[in-house]
Amino acid sequence: MRKLSLFLSLILALAAAPQVSASEKLYFYTENFPPYNMSATGRAFEHNGDSIDGLCTEMVKAILSHTSLDYVIKLRNWDYGYNRAKDKKNHGIFCTTYTESRAPMFKWVGPLTKNLWTVFAPANTDLQIDKLEDARGLLFGGYRNDVMTEYLLERGYKVSALDSDDLNPKRLELGQVDLWIADRLAGPYFASQQDVEGLEPVYSFNDTELYLAINPATPDSVVEELNAALKKVHETGMYEAIETKYGL
Image (cartoon, helix red, strand yellow):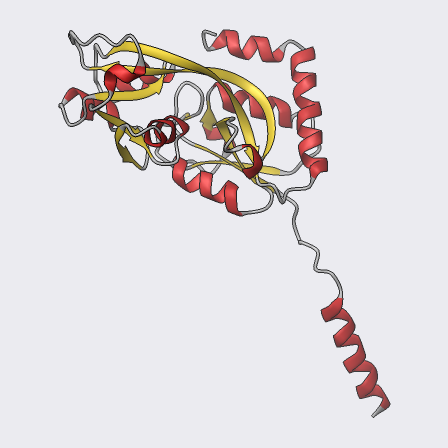
């Protein structure tokens, strides 16, 4: 009876003990958004960081090389990765635009680089846009949970949003949307992948900073280590070298 009592006491003690995660591995997600992030093999998804390339990816890998952190980098569609980073501890997504509304949703590492929001029109357009308001009433192509799409929707613009940005250049060429909002550097890459030529950047605005956004339940020590490593990337000249490589 005494042995049974001791056994039960041990079980209760173990149940009451704090549960420690078996792994503190970090999971970082990105998307096909060339030249910032992209599959090195041309696939839609990648589960191995060695098969993921691009400006932001190289920045993140350079940062991680100055840490002792265990990590995985995966390439999925934006909506999937964004929700994983938003909902799960030790998960993050890059490159993510920092905004005031997003600020409390994540912990932030960066800035990694910048981008310039640009409105693209079909080839040979005679459309002239001097301010964003000139495009009100027209239908934009965008994609879900993207900051540019959210910006337009919050201000009452019409946006047809997909799960990713891949098909928007072709939709614009075919007249399924009137305009396409994308990054000034990334837009032409996406268009070339869809064999779409001649899209015209008719208006640019909102030069923004891109970050690695990490779930807020992730320990502060992890985020501090990553930001300290980013400082080392700057100090070694690697930050400037990576931006120069991609034409910035």
